[in-house]
Image (cartoon, rainbow, N blue to C red):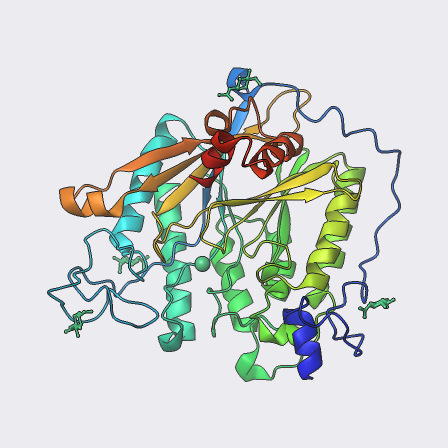
Length: 435
Ligand SMILES: *[C@@H]1O[C@H](CO)[C@@H](O)[C@H](O)[C@H]1NC(C)=O
Ligand SMILES: *[C@@H]1O[C@H](CO)[C@@H](O)[C@H](O)[C@H]1NC(C)=O
Ligand SMILES: *[C@@H]1O[C@H](CO)[C@@H](O)[C@H](O)[C@H]1NC(C)=O
Ligand SMILES: *[C@@H]1O[C@H](CO)[C@@H](O)[C@H](O)[C@H]1NC(C)=O
Ligand SMILES: [Zn+2]
């Protein structure tokens, strides 16, 4: 009904929906959580080692939202008044730049090739322990896509990563633009008929991702594009298909209750990780949070899970917004609980510098916490790259340096946000974040 759609997608406008099951009322459905196994004492001892002096650390490369446009044409019209430009006829006034363009354009393939080539050199000198790849490979030409070209892009990027990082583990997550049609991720409970089933896509995902993932992940990838796998003894990654909470995945409107049982599966994985003494990092494409576009009831349950397992979930990584953002999640008593890092996009779409990020994670020693201690974000100035015909990827900022922290943790982010909120009394701190 109109009411239930409003309740799911616009919970602020429609808080009082009578149709309980489809209302998006966050109390309507709850995943079941195991009781706490012991009193919560882990809060205080999270991270005491300053990152700058930390010798034992893990380096993660995070790539997100590459949106490669294979039809990108240098010199074409960059201001075309369509959802995606830089791919039409030559235009004398608004010529698309060589390495990408800020004006409503996705990234040419050669720019992606350039950055991966450079990163592979970095990798030879100072190896990444693993790569997080949080989805959205195709361009924004959603009206002209089909199954075949989506599969081609999946294959193309997978091959490129394998070519440049033959010995580096890659942990992918599925983006809303990766399926066809875009955003088409029906929950297992909804019978779509063959024409709109995403089974062909999940099968292809498994086939592509199996170069990096063990066969134990096949079942859930083919069920719904999510999986969990051990990175090292005591350390696990869970990749969620958060398109199951995406408001533009219209199938979810038909049955928003834990689509494909993924959250209950997540609880099962975390429960067994807790028993085995493992730490867990969570990755996905669409970040949780009802604003702007993850369904409220799903987010609410996701955060209940984080709350229950906060002592073993050491970090979360997402993409999708194309912005450089963080989400800090708080306990009910107002103490910071968990940080979700939202990496900026590789695509410039729109008015963004192409970007990627490298995280330092505390690792490889007896009391390893597997939590993020610092990160560095690198960007490409497209205008300069065009003028000099040299794409120069530069450090934009080092988070600890920029924010004057010795390491990053939920508590430290909480302090920083407290500072930013006092904008009028501490312009310096707020500006560091805003820039
Ligand atoms: C949401 O659901 C709960 C439990 O079913 C109910 O008590 C509450 O009144 C509902 N809230 C709204 C705004 O519908
Ligand atoms: C070139 O761009 C201008 C300004 O946006 C537009 O008016 C014109 O129609 C474009 N020409 C072509 C051939 O696309
Ligand atoms: C990926 O696309 C590029 C650009 O069209 C092409 O040169 C390359 O051969 C493709 N790679 C694969 C494995 O399809
Ligand atoms: C950075 O942090 C240190 C220690 O917390 C503090 O003494 C110093 O004043 C801070 N510097 C700036 C520029 O805020
Ligand atoms: Zn995207």
